[in-house]
Image 1 (cartoon, rainbow, N blue to C red):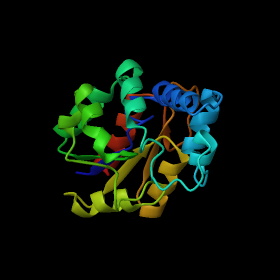
Image 2 (cartoon, helix red, strand yellow):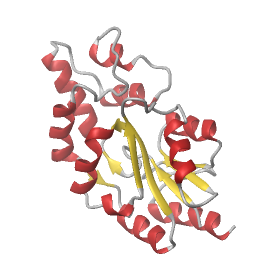
Image 3 (cartoon, rainbow, N blue to C red):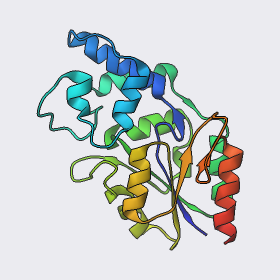
Length: 208
């Protein structure tokens, strides 16, 4: 059996529109102009970007997540427009039947996770849910993956994500990585376009 760790935003839930609408509502309240959605998501998902300065024009921002301090905006838009990607419940149920250890490692604040996961009725699938909080570094730092891996039941661990930060976190934690490209026409060897492709890739690891 294996440990399967998932990112949340962009991997389990389609939250891009909610994130972008929340960021632009924050900007409006800060008297800043709206940004294009693609630009917002690229900023959030690219390692090394000073997202606080880029998104909110705030210098010396001490929070470790772009949602910290602005939770009410994200909760509002998450409730309005976030949906699960097709086949996520089926995938999680399949992995539980295979006795896999399931976890989440996300850059979203720890305090926001239970409400989101309960809303989509998937919280019960996970043995461990870990987000950013005091003392827990965001990806691409491998801390979350390493902490989960060290307490999980099995020796073999897979990380499933959707961004360059996720890919780097897996590399830094020295675990194999599968990359979500939901609905895309083409995918590389470590990428999947739908839940059926993801299950096939995980089955190969389970059978190894």
